[in-house]
Length: 330
Image 1 (cartoon, one colour):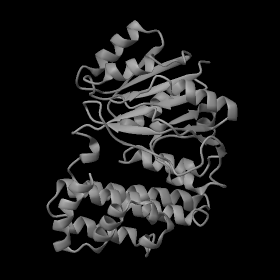
Image 2: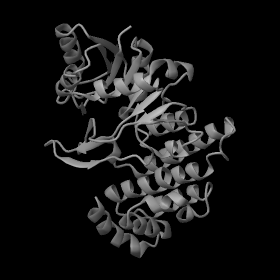
Image 3: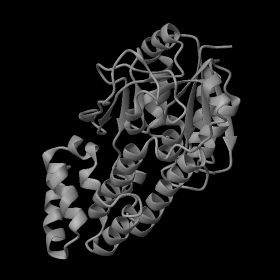
């Protein structure tokens, strides 16, 4: 058994794949395997995967028909042999000491998950933002004692997972949905009993591409899929009898991920956001009647709190001003 299985879903990223794989190959922790899951790429990505594998015995390639990022990650997880698992998106890059640092912490604390920060970088490699989690650092945490784990970044890419833990929880990304990261990781948060967050410099470089799926341009699908994602999360917590236990955290997930983020996305690509904002607000009111009274509302910056209030009011005149405010906040 190798130490870490690094899983990369690959779809039409021939311009980025080689740099991504090189950043994994350059890790100072040498005991790893690299699983490239070609999800039916229509460019040269599949051939590039095979070429990379031919030059490095640590690389294995899986080819499958296009089924989405979640399916590709699931396929990689099923094929993994490492004690730990790291998910890396194939247009991103990781810092050389990521595995060395996270493995040391995982072994020291027998952690199920080691969480770290990431930074968003543009295509010139310039940092645009860096994440910071609102939980204690360098100590084992459980969702029972630290409910704020539900509110940490729901990306699978800023976490080193124990594969045994994922197997025990029968973890898989949901298929046929958008925002599968939000659904899968938030639902897994309820079962976390040994999570260690290491702060400091970000260890993962998330590439901000102009054609990112986050800017898909389809307001109707954005709204429908955000609503579906929030319902799937609440459904899971109802099923396990934990909705009341995590009431404040779940309400804020509905407010932030189910309303605020998609509302801001929609402002990027439609000049008539009113009907979509109304639908998002109607859905939000199913989960909380007072989102701005939630204690986590205070975590937003003053500009974000203002924008949240204006979005929540949904006045068509104000919305025109929001378009300018949104550009200011980006």
